Length: 306
Image (cartoon, rainbow, N blue to C red; front, side):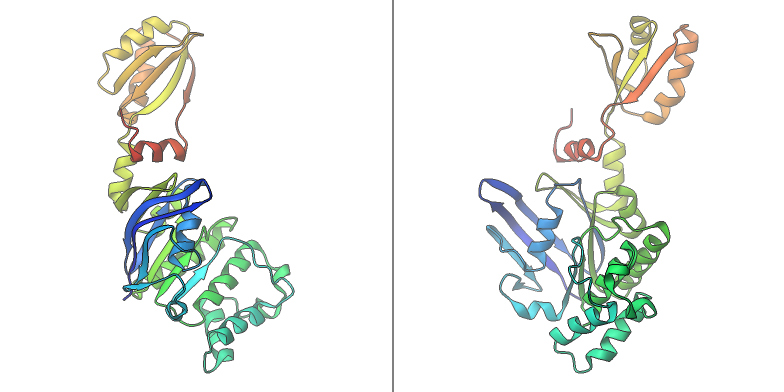
């Protein structure tokens, strides 16, 4: 049972602050590191794997510093997002090389065990540059698992993977979490995290935005007001009707036509809007969500709440 701890960790590159004062504890089981692209997830994983030194704060594994501590690699495995640069090797050669670098007593047997775990035994004789994206992800995972680490870090492991391979990877992660390993994977897709992890750490713009089980994070996201633009043939009449609705937080006329509508309860609003339009003889021409991106959700979690 191993625990990764970040305590007030910051990392900057010149004048660019990639990670800003992040504190979190990652224990046994599966944890999802959720955030939009550019949020600092890859930098955090590099800090947790000892490949980057903190500019401030501390990053430890079971109390031992990660930076310049090669002993941590006996218990830590990393699956980076970047593509493998060893396309001329076979999958078996890559995984065996990893086993040899770890100084395992029987690197050949260890490589075969790892390849079997990720169901890559048969294609392992082929060169990596002939693999699909999903196969490359699996051979990277085998290379990270070859020394049977207690801690596994994966950076965007589902990127570019087809649905069948995604399900296989998800099953693997669930199994490793159930074995008591400390597994952390990053993603910018909420639904991916929901299917695998219960514990969620949310980051945005290099800051720690939220932490909790998936249900808590989902409630924070779905409870936030949602913004829409509604265009009709009678904007003022519709605005007067919407203001009286409990599901509507605010209504504002747009200068060039249409309404900005802030909605607290989308389900109720979706039912009531067509009924209101019919009751007040208003034709709805357009209904567009204006802040449905992950960036807007995370900004809300960080503190941009009305």
